[in-house]
Length: 133
Image (cartoon, rainbow, N blue to C red):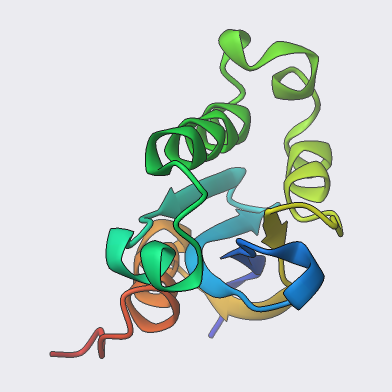
């Protein structure tokens, strides 16, 4: 237990028609201050997107989410937000929004490997697969 550190995460949701408040999970944002880790992982299922709305373009959604990945990495191409401190970048990514791409409330846990935790949460919450199989 001594090797474990705290982490926070939020689920990235796609809300194709904001006025209907229906959504499906498309990604995960995970932050560990002590491990200096911030990661974003996403995958938008075209069939789910079409079931919710035929009006949204998958390429456009993916491009927005790719910018979230750049922000998480602190990439210079991510603009001013990408240059924020790592904790501030997480807070910006996990902030409450009323747009097509939203984040859940943040949750916390303990881990010794934030990257592995990100992958596990992504498997369970986005791909709906048991990470142990």
